Amino acid sequence: MPVLIAPSVLAADFGNLERDSNMINSSEADWFHIDIMDGVFVPNISFGMPVLAAIQKHAKKPLDVHLMIVDPDRYIKNFYELGAAVLTVHYEACDHLHRTIQSIKSYGMKAGVALNPHTPINLLADVIQDIDLVCLMSVNPGFGGQSFIENTYGKIQELKSLIDQKNTSCIIEIDGGVTDKNAAKLISCGADVLVAGSHVFKSDDPKQKIKTLKELG
Ligand code: DX5
Ligand code: ZN
Image 1 (cartoon, rainbow, N blue to C red):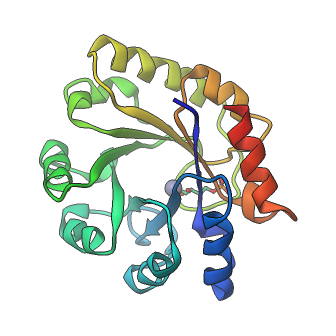
Image 2 (cartoon, rainbow, N blue to C red):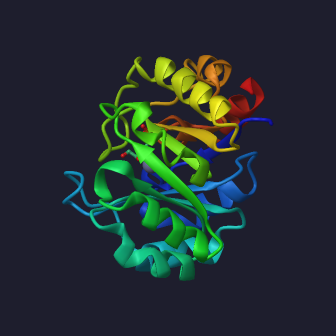
């Protein structure tokens, strides 16, 4: 499968969401990556439902929603109604992860599970068959523009072998500090989806950055 590129709207210009959404629409990007932060699970607050509704109005590609919030079960229905195609919750934020995954899937959304940089892959061994996507955090969640954590490469390989061993079809997303410098190695280790925020939006030519990432796959 060619690598999927998911620009993170967190790094967009919120005064120009229509313009930036249209940039993603007309680029080679595959998904919109939407970071929802609650100021409790992570030490930052990003944006919530009304802003996502505004993005959804303009987005012509699937919404990949990454919930960095405690007790995400409370809002699964809301994010379904806001058009999420993939809904990702954090392993560290769920007491009953299996139930949460089933609930996401019951709405017809793809279920994703994100792991913080310190969380080992083997904790997913008994639930990997139920997951559509694992999001490996390659920075500590909460902020865009941080440096990539090198330990991620080994985690991708470990996750890939867990997926193979369980003979399941879950895909691997990498989130945080992705650039055209590390993308090729991430893909060769087994990444299927690359999230990129600052690398795309802080550039003079966001579409070209997306194209270059896409071509590295
Ligand atoms: C971090 C978010 C990321 C972030 C990536 O908590 O989950 O999606 O927006 O931004 P960059 O690509 O700038 O690291
Ligand atoms: Zn994210």
